[in-house]
Length: 487
Image (cartoon, rainbow, N blue to C red; front, top):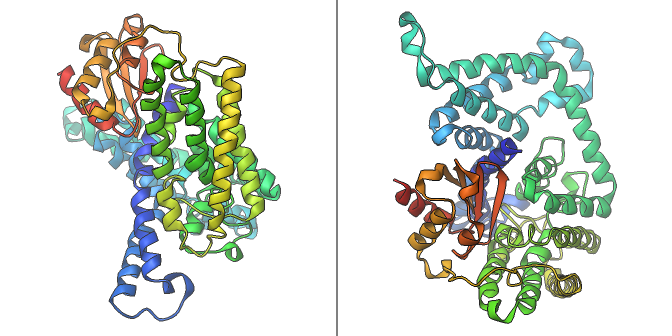
């Protein structure tokens, strides 16, 4: 579990590159419709649009490489770039040895099998990118301090990491030569099963996507349906300017249902939480869930909201995930289609609306109103019916809250540090997009109530020596101050 959490954190680094892709390509398509529709491209404005589309596509088209570097660096001790270099060496080794042309030279019979040929045609995919990143980072962590005999001393320490990663990648490639076609076939079966279920399949996917957020395993599911590793690639094809006529499913169906839920459903649920909060804690609840709801509406970052209640009321979180499934099912049937490069917020809706695959985007208004009402009613009913301890309803003593809205990051960091037992108890400090991730010596020294008094969204204890503090999109500023206090 700790490994998966670390991997999930590392994957957020390359995922953070996606918003710029969306902005560049969205603006580019607006300026240069011919990029999507064909025809001559003349004049400064259309050429500028083409330039922006190509710039954004450079990242989308090489998403697997972003995963290679992101995971290689993100999972390496101290986020050392040597792990990224080793990951790149691993990637180059595996994608060369498993390239269709080379594989069919080694094993000519594969050329006669369409499925196996397709498997190796798709070898340069995010899964292999993640695998290369893991190999590179693990080799760095294990061999970065290796001491070799004097006559090989030049290759000691970090210099041997990429070499070891290359050797391991040769072995892994030999295994994948036989295993990959089988795995790929299984993924194709899963993908076809979901795609074959139409709107119901899209709903099941959305439900599982939200349900797996706490574990970080939603990244694996997303790679199957958003990126082109089994012939789907809903996200990549959408932003490539294609339409449903270019693929064998309704393009955008695995993304569209998230928009009404994130943009309007979460604000509805947030309002229910505020109204059901204790009178003396309504301001605290507003400060937490209102800002989280705004973040979800604008850019689709939902973790500050979700982690604010998923462990306080896990049953409610299951209902929350089920609502995503229901709205995705309905959205797919109604024909609303929009896509995102980062997440399903207003920003991505605005820029994806100009893409050729976008359909009936005006439906976001009635769908959004429906999502707001349904989420509000369901959350309010569940909270009051079962007395759920959502934000503002916890049975803890009143403490002075440090509000992140005041931008007093030093004070927030100070309270968190005190809550984890002081700098002497901290062995590692890291952060992702929304979480401060800490490794500690003594878990008994952690005071969760004290940490929460800093005004954070929540505290997670994934392991005996791990503490994750859910802060939100301002986590980097808090992390910087936290590191200063620990020096």
